[in-house]
Image (cartoon, rainbow, N blue to C red; front, side, top):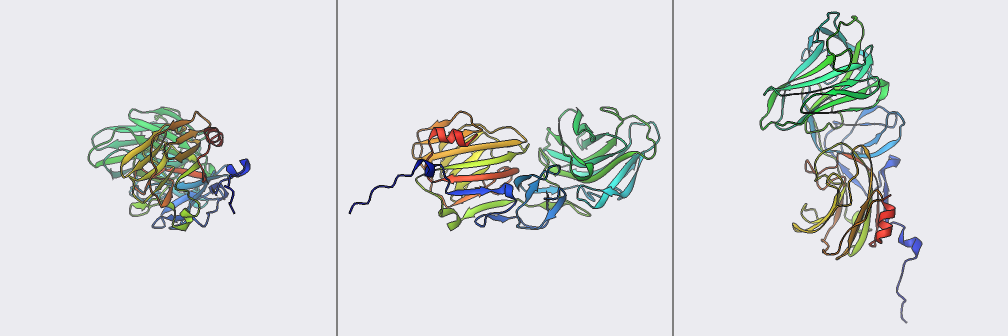
Length: 415
């Protein structure tokens, strides 16, 4: 008896063998998450910033709508700012201002936000500051601020070599005002209880660690620091953070010492991987919410053998899909990577000498020459656990087909 060859129907062709949806706020049992220590935070399903224990997934929610943004995956970072919610502490120097402890509920929903009140003197230095030693390279300085009578606030960092970075923020409307030289500035929110996260990042790095002053200034308008306070109006402050890097990551609470949040490592290994993977051909779909991270080597996913030089992946910040075998490049195509703070969808199809990819419904990029690596796992939200290779964003959905989809299908599924 001759068994007829199996050919999938049109419907079966477009049904993925593996599908993950992280926007449901639940983790598929085949996915493993590791992250040491209980120092990581996320916005929970109630819209509040909350600490989450080690080795648990960080499903992150939009505070205003409570929509799930997906699985938050970040590299390791350290918050160097001490007493990050205790601005009344002596480590914070007050100039032409006072601080009232625990004056309002913070974005975590507890009575933990302090009130910064400028003096009634008509001066330009209503401020509080903390003195730190920042690591070599770029760094980001961020604070959660809510209006308590005044809308405009200024953040300033002055490095030990005399260079500075600064910006003004309106914490009522959520807009960035005047931005100083050598600075990138962002504002995020609103978070619970009317807080916005204001961030400045230096674009001029240093080769050695430098002593720094990190300032929070009162302001009466954009680019206007000189004013006389009324003695009662001010700002509610919470969650100060100074970290090495060209952008801010999720908040890391501190008290007497700096604290580190370890990297999120998310993977599918063993039969949890081999049960759906086809070594000869296939297609991978990923949908992410891309943050404002920098670095072309950050990956949304990677299928490999455990070695960073042997596998295939998608790198949204570099706008490319790659395949390499023992360090030898097989495929490097550029379908696009989307833009910061937006949803990005990418589909990558593979078969020996037959590769294609598309992003957000754009043109299909192809390569007709290349072999396939021998692999045994998938890393989600990164190429590896190394700093500079982790997504630093949200993975929302992933799907896998055990056949190389057609170019038309690849483009359609990327829309």
